[in-house]
Length: 344
Image (tube, rainbow, N blue to C red; front, top):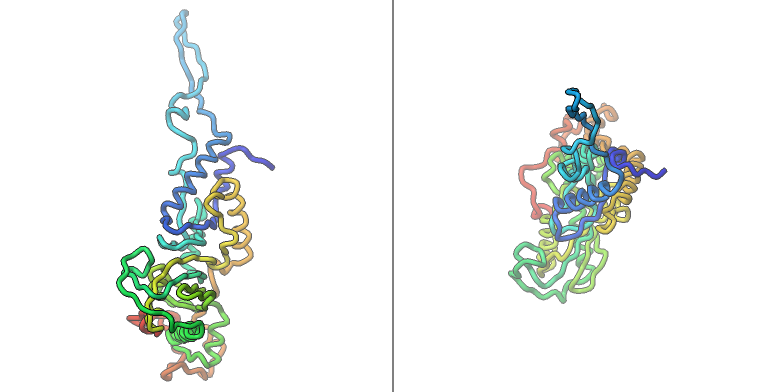
């Protein structure tokens, strides 16, 4: 059924929107461009007519004639277009940095509540991070001032893979240590099978997977599965990798290809930020959310449930910690200071 009533379409614009944010454009500018396009397309449809008002005119017989006429104060030429930017609510579920392109999830109108739930749930995101050996910059990005140069002829594919494997193992081991569990025990297995292990603090970046997908000296591309990350952390990670390989490196590009269950393949490109494509995208994303309720709330991976499974207190974490005595808060509390040096 073809609907041309702008008011009916406006009431249906609710949910999670998956768009592809270009690099060099802020999230605020992206949301403004989308809402502006929605207003323009809605105003081209059938909009509400001006309201009617009662008009009283005195006649020659010293009486009044009653008439119903359009209210000039409600005319489009007086109050402006029917659909305006202020009528829309749009909030990002998880924001992207200025230099980062890729999947950006936006909550539209009543979908802002769903965006808040996704942000609290903190889904794992997948990035393609590109770097270049030989130069180090002030901000670790290519558009900054060069502060150091180094040779990179000794850097090989095998050396990079070895370093990345060690880095990934360190992060995975650190997550279980924060939970007070030895990674070699059955308690670690019972904890991991409940879902992604998330730190209690949203300020602690965690890498769940990192691999080399392309290496053409001096350029390289990494695929990173991370949580609580930001573009500065990823750029610093590229810089640290260059130092560990006895060279220097800087980040040339960051692209988010997946955020939870939402992939870049379903993202709306810039020329598709139109009303028909947005309505279609909202419908597709509602199906994904319905089929995957863990998008809003994942089953808790806290150790409190292990107590019921192991009443004999047989599991002991590292340093002799009794798992059954660990509460949900204390099990997931991060240490006071953790930075990149901790995982080297």
